[in-house]
Image (cartoon, rainbow, N blue to C red; front, side):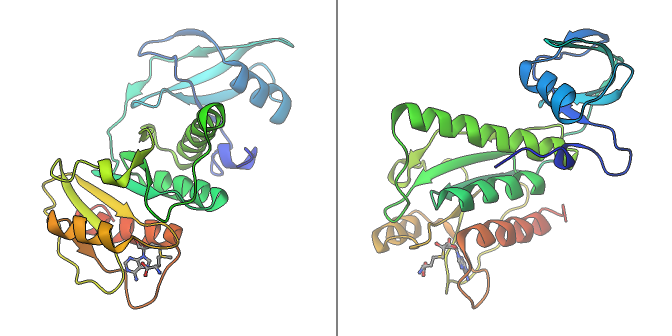
Length: 248
Ligand code: SAM
């Protein structure tokens, strides 16, 4: 998913928001990463004196000003900043692998909607994952999508991206699990507990997977009488669960 200048600037204030993982609480001067230097100097073409908002992905946010910009690096000076409230949904999204661009889109939307964590899952009917080095690159690509979505949506808490896991290895008794499955009866969640929301691949869950989930009292969730694309099921399910948590 290409990074565009528009997605990373607040439309209201036109102030760029940058993820700066290395910044800690407290004022000071910071040398930006190559990614952020490139973005500011080549994409936005900002000049010294430009105001920014920076955040570190675990809640800290500060105002900053570009104080030095050369061909090779950008330095910014930070105000003291604050640790902002974590307003993410108490939900981990478990999403079976689907076509790559649809998966990317679902990650972006889930981050905008404020999930706490994302667990890519390999179900029986999932698309095949890339191997070795390609999988490592794919994870970096997914992580960049989460960062971009947080920059765009004003979220200072980046969801945790968990390693790819076969559905058969999910710990079913670990937390409140909910799985989206057509033609099921929805069982309400307990809003005092964290949820793990599981969405199947385009081919759906295999009947053995459904049997396993049901046997372990995983709560089914209907999203209506029509069959939705997996990525649509991500948005609809997170919205409905968010409502049960009183977040929407
Ligand atoms: N033929 C598949 C089936 O019947 O399960 C369709 C799979 S659907 C394209 C992909 C995933 O989105 C499903 O595995 C489920 O998790 C979710 N989903 C789609 N429509 C749904 C609905 N109406 N209710 C609940 N979940 C749904």
